[in-house]
Length: 208
Image (spheres, rainbow, N blue to C red):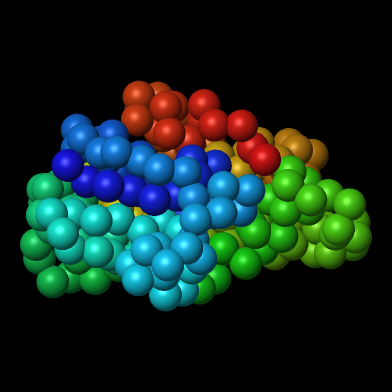
């Protein structure tokens, strides 16, 4: 059974939990990070010297970095729909996974911390700037979704799993007045919200 260390209100942890739910992979989870501590305990630093979450152990093999964890689990347990075998399609999935980490995550982190976790520590101007930047980035996702149901092809893939937890925060923390009308993105988001594993591991967790 997979062992996961990480609190369930971390979007990086949610990605892993959601994917496990999608493929029916059993796991045990131990709270770690922020108020739960643990990440700097000796046994945890031996597993993950970065002292961050999530960290997993799969049959004695320890993995950290959420998107690396997703790729490992998909290769080992998840099938071709989530992580296609063809070079081109796999590259497409990985491109969106990396984009989520290198580009989309930064403004979404400011929005989340500024409106949910520590609003007294972020000036309104900084949050507004992050909303404007994120709006432009979500438009890129929308353009990609034109004429298709999923970001990387005909099936839900790791591209969705890496981006989807942030989509919940976007639609929950940014008002309709702040968001431009976007049928492509909204239809895609509704499709995510209809999935039981997304409801359980993303939507049901309080934003804090």
